[in-house]
Length: 291
Image (cartoon, rainbow, N blue to C red; front, top):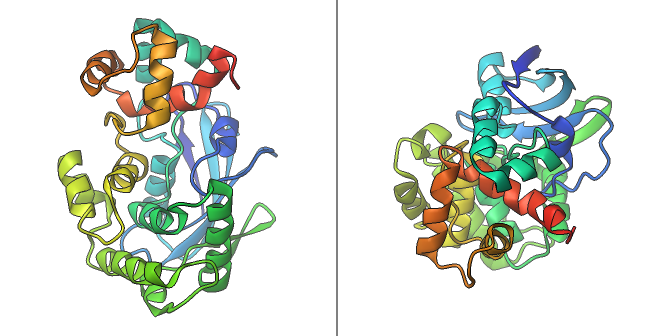
């Protein structure tokens, strides 16, 4: 099952594939971005996807049993090609700081978690852990209880779906008190409460509030699920300390930056406040000479 996705504006698959985010620890790009995930609409089907960029198109090869349309839509969301990249470039023409960052990383867009379900699982297993340790734990969980598929000559493992997750009573590296939290996520997924269509039918703040009813899902992780898994391009993350530290340095505004001042400054990023925030987090240190 193959399909092609248009990028619609500046896009760099290499930048997305090597951006340290969530469980992704890839540092060397060989021309292919490999993914394995639970498919939207129940999260019980699994696919492996190999993505290659050819100019303004992404060529995707899929292994697994799922319909082409939902997989293509999910890949487009994960790679942020479901929005118009030319419109984001316009933000850079209005805002010199964003423009400089876009020049440093032309085609950078936010890579997303595969789904709200997978972001919620990540939230539980990564809490109070270094990201690489959490990524290793997620990989072991996927290999032991998920589904392994092939993507461009390599084996990649997808997380277990919610029904299988409910069957897990213990796992090395996951504290016993976190297992019930994972089960609660599995039950929410089975009830349809972690589908993108469900969460995006609400205002982002309401979706975050609903997620916080799940055990272990506080304000930070509920915002992570909504902002970095649902494909919303214009939700402003107001609780990211690193972002709030970088903005005054880049814009030359007084510190500490209040929430009110940050919200007002970010108005210039509409309708891509999420994308601009990710760009600042990922490329801002390079512009400042710190990374």
